[in-house]
Structure formats: C-alpha cells, structure tokens
Image (spheres, rainbow, N blue to C red):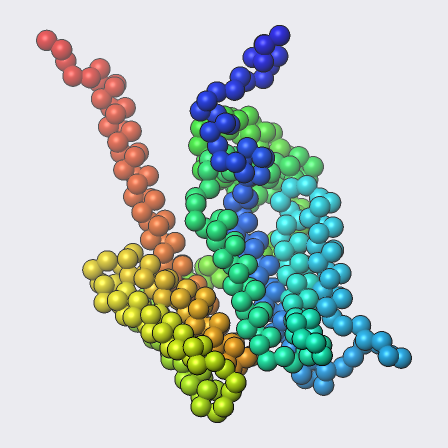
Length: 377
C-alpha cells in the first residue's frame, strides 16, 4: 500500500525536507516567546533589586538558627523547579506566562547570590556581583534575540501557534480575545498545508469567558499603549536623544569619579567605557541629524545607540559603580521602549499601505476579469 493510499500525503522535495532543521525536528518557535522571555528577564532583574533593597532595609536577617542559614538561593531553586513542573505538566499556551513569572522570581533569587559561589570566602557583597548579574542577563537577551529577533517567523510557525491556542480551547473554550488572537496567527500563516483544517477547528471551539488572567500580556499591552501615545509627539526624538546622552554622560562621569577615587579597576576598562559611550553618542547624533529627512532610518540609529549603551557601556558602569548604575539602566530601557514603539508604528503603517496597495491591485484585476479583458479584433 502506498503512502498516499494510506491517507498520508506523500513527501515532496519542496515540503518538510526543505524546512529548517528545527522545524524538521518538530521545534517551531512560539510567536509569543519574545513576550514571555521579556517577562522572565524583567522579573529576574526586579527580583534582584527588590531582594537587595529588602535585605538592606531589614539589616540582612538570616533564616535559621543553630549554625544553619537557609539562603534565598534555595528558595530561588525551588521556584525555578516549580516553574519547570508547571511548564512540563500542562499543554497549551495558557500556563507559559505564569511559568515565566515564577521562573523569573526564582532565577532572580538564585543569581542574586552569585557572589557566594565565585569567591572562596562566600562573599555576598563581592564588588563585581552587579556586573556579573548584568552580563548574565545581557547574555540571555542576546540568546533570545538570536532565536527570535534575527529571522522572522515562518508561516508554519504561525500555523503551529494557532494550533497551540486550539489545544487550550478544546478543553476550556475560547474567549473572544483568545479566538481573535488565534485567527490572527492563522492569517499570518497564510495558505500553508493544514491552515484550512486548523481554521475549521478554531471555528468549532465553543465560546467561554473564563480564563486564567494573563498578567504578562496585560502588562505588555499597557506599556506598549503608553509608549505609543508618547511617540506621537514631535519632540520625542529630541527627548530620546537627550535622555540617552544624559544617561551615557552620567555613566562616563561615574566611571571617571570611581577611577579617580582609587577604585581597583584596570585602565582598559575605563578606556572601553569612554569609547563605547562615544560610539553610542555619535550614532544617536547622526540619527538626530537625519530624523527630518528619513524618520525610519533615524529611529533605527537610535535603537543601535541604545543597544550599544545597554550591551557595552552599562556593563562597565556596573563594574565601576555597582548598584548605583541602576538609574542609567532604567533610563536606557525607557528610551529603548520609546524607540521600539515608534519603529513598530512605522512598520504597522507600512504594512497597512502595502495591504491597501494589494487590495487596490486585486480590485483592478477583478474589474479587468469581469469586463472580459481587452477586446480582441
């Protein structure tokens, strides 16, 4: 009996065999992964900062007695294990935001004690701790960017995302919001094999208004809405560059002050700090110079300037000034949010223009076909 006669489609050279290896292994990227990873990393950083602030305010109390000390790295490990149990126990996308938050808190508590594990005397107050935590978070950001930011999602991945939504809908029904999100993924998948079957499945799922609150999506929606309201103002490019230059200048000044006060820091680190700050400043100023002529190019330059500051300059600032550098980090993150919000609006406007052009072209083609085409003599 042939493969086709058994009810299975025959393999074709342009089918599965031509897809990337991860898809052939059955590992499509989740279209919502960037939100979940961002929630994980933001929760990690917030957990570290809140833990340090609480311990300092409480006088660094210890849990235990009789020579025992229950370090919060243990609580972090338990929360990370709980996140794994949640993610491995339930099918569908509903549990992932909760897993990201629980895992982020756990990883924050875990990595906050990194100083104890890289020093022979278990020094929680080891000076480079802030820089080590920051470098770890940056490395995770770069890994996430390599997985999800460098290549657009393939249609098959959007189709898998829509089918993934159907997994939870089959048991719990769809809220109108979830159904719209699933159909949106299906529209982005286009006319790929299996799309019609998934569409029929989505349409068959019952409606139900009970759902687990998605803190990640709601928080992200509020942040995006706030940033998009801000970027409609014409003064935003000037404020963006001004805030970036202020944060960069403050970082360089902190580094110079730390070096002049005798901080044990190699000279090359100070040079790298100044050079990276100069590159970030130059790129931002070039963007400001072209913003009137080419707004998309200007904002792409702004994004590069902020990324240089976040991924290079702030690493050295944290090494020189430890936790005092947090303010500059927050400014960079706000500036990056503004820039990304403006770029997303410009990309959405371009997509709307392209869609309108395609609709107009289709209408012209349909009109020509209904007229029977040009008369042949």
